[in-house]
Image 1 (tube, rainbow, N blue to C red):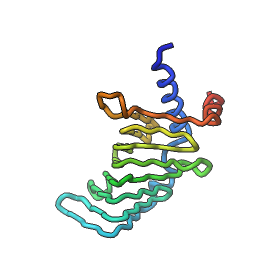
Image 2 (cartoon, rainbow, N blue to C red):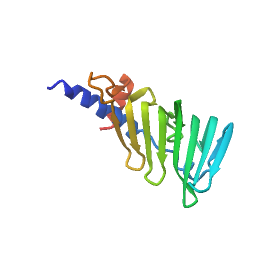
Image 3 (cartoon, rainbow, N blue to C red):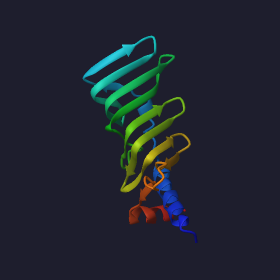
Length: 177
């Protein structure tokens, strides 16, 4: 067995834990209104963007994003692209009533609603039910339930992807097969 095999197995198990537990929103979340609270808001009609700054909190159903600043790009009247920036920006969401919340953080969180993509950049981290996935960047395609993680590309080999899976999640994952 090569030295990369345990790492690949670990990433596979972690991604299985996150995707099998449904790291997606409650079905009712998308039908709820988006509410944003901030210290300041600026709307630019020509660019179709509204920028919120200072202790920003965005909620939609079980979704809660906190950040130093959030920009909402409107496409044909809908909020299609949401960019949250913070040190870190955080995203918490309840995937289902009987599941633990998903807790994500990064320096920059981008949600592209039309592509159903959540993109975490800079010190990216997702945790749920004790399992943790971290790296420099994490992409999550919600409808496909596909997670891709990558470390930084520095020459010293630092910044790799890290996966932590508690023993009870390993047992639960093997029982599902």
